[in-house]
Amino acid sequence: MAKILVTGAAGFIGSHTVDLLLAEGHAVVGVDNFRTGRRENLAAALRQPAFALHPLDVAAPGVLAALVAAERPAAIIHLAALVSVPESIANPELNFSLNLQATHLVAEAARAAGVGRVVFASSAAIYGDTAELPIQETAEKAPLSPYGAAKLASEALLLGHGACYGFTVRCHRYFNVFGPRQDPSSPYSGVISIFGRRYQERQAVTIYGDGRQTRDFIAVRDVARANVRAATLPGLVSGAANICTGRATSLLDLADIFARHYPGVPAPRLAPARTGDIVHSLGSPARATAELGFTATTAVAAGLAELIAAPPAAAAP
Ligand code: UD1
Image (cartoon, rainbow, N blue to C red; front, side):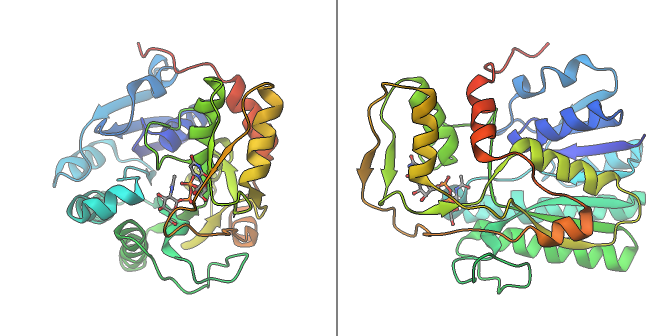
């Protein structure tokens, strides 16, 4: 069993990744500055002796490097980020610091301490809106936001470091991730988290556009599995892969699935499409299958049933 350091451990994807690492018997060093991460997400992890949590900021020079030098993990899973595309547009300086500079500091910390592997949370946002569907990893990269640009630059930075200093880098280009612990509080939060809260409150959801737009929704439990595999599977070589299902779900389909769980909730309201909204987004999962042996197994309907049944976050000890 290995020691794995996870940045952004208290976040949506981070906390599920921590839980799975612990379930598989690994020792986990979690790092979070609690800017968007929540301690409650780690309620179960914090009860386990194999988990240590460090409240620190990855973007502050020297801080992570000292921890990595002291802990000497076998791998770092770097998930800490500014996660909102609209926030990156409103505050590109903060995006630079949290999404690019922080990645540089992770790369440097890995180099200095001789960490063997770094797994990085990249995004489908690096492709922009120009690619043919399903999107292959070789598609043109044309990010449409500071967020997408920083994720693309971070991939290059990590892969360059890895090639030069001899560690393996796996970049995970997540598509639309959903599941328990996703924050629904902003209008630009993931649509499934927003729909989940609205249906729970028995309020009509709003669909922007005609509802025929589609996304490749992947359950967070599958994403956590991809992360753990990439951090622990022996013999992996560096590279970048889509983390997606290869299946498209429309917004109308989503609303139908929710409606079956919540009979009597008023039908969705249609509103004008959002400016800049992409109509279809769909990834090809072939490379992740070939290189990582990873395939998403949770169908959207099953993932939604699990989300709807999930208890609200428990208080952290
Ligand atoms: C993602 C980003 C978004 C960014 C965009 C750039 C997330 C959560 N969102 O959006 O910030 O600008 O990539 O490509 O990472 N929708 C509704 N009703 C709602 C909320 C959303 O109909 O209440 C629609 C949206 O208009 C969109 C679809 O649902 O058509 C999915 O929205 P979202 O979950 O924000 O994901 P992306 O559009 O992929």
